[in-house]
Length: 63
Image: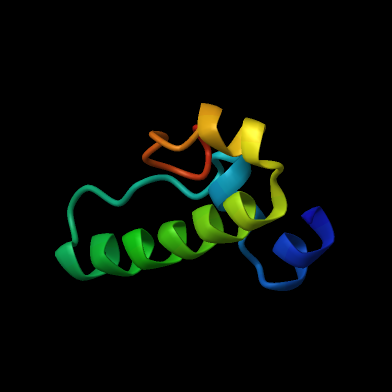
């Protein structure tokens, strides 16, 4: 999974190095879209028991 995240330049959503934008609404919308995509990828790669324990996480970094 980490190779895919690096390849797609999305690892920052998991390690927290891409912070939530606070000033620009357009950047926030784009960030939310990418975060949702990464969360989806993470959920798909997990076993059901683990997925249930993180289903309420709002960010990929929380997962």
